[in-house]
Length: 193
Image (cartoon, rainbow, N blue to C red; front, side, top):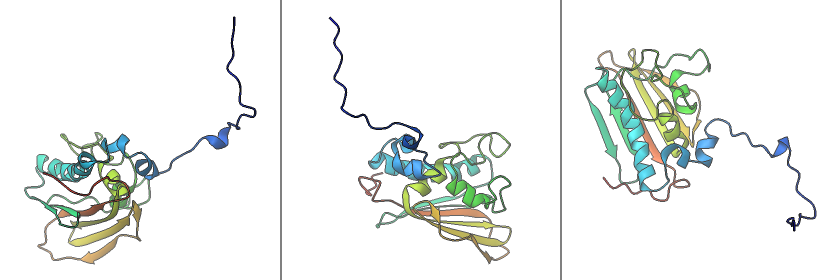
């Protein structure tokens, strides 16, 4: 005896229009667990590790000897190092500054092999962009070549072009990243270290 399951009276159409394409950082916001494991406290901590790992990579490569990490009472986290600073020149493939490329394009970074780093941690090119995507606000400041370059982001989107200010000649180099994880994404904004 063969039985067949009853068919719905009218099946919904299934065609190319049903296939979704998530662009840029939208995929990270829609499925954060794919990138940081969870949206609980472990995932929250993971954001910090990703930014700190970038500074540690600079230290392991011999370019950085100081990393400052501050967790503020309101949930903001800042990580500052005295490394080389993220490059600020225009990226040849994206046409954006290297900073904006690293912050907004998945799989963009100096850790894939071409001589940027011999040893590295983190998510290998998705860390900073994932932190940006999962934060309600981010500020990146790069000290490099006698200037300070600043760019702000809201939920992964740049809020205008990078601003350049003349710095002091002896200011050194480095990267400062300050972010606030997004309460719309995370179950808690309470850190526990």
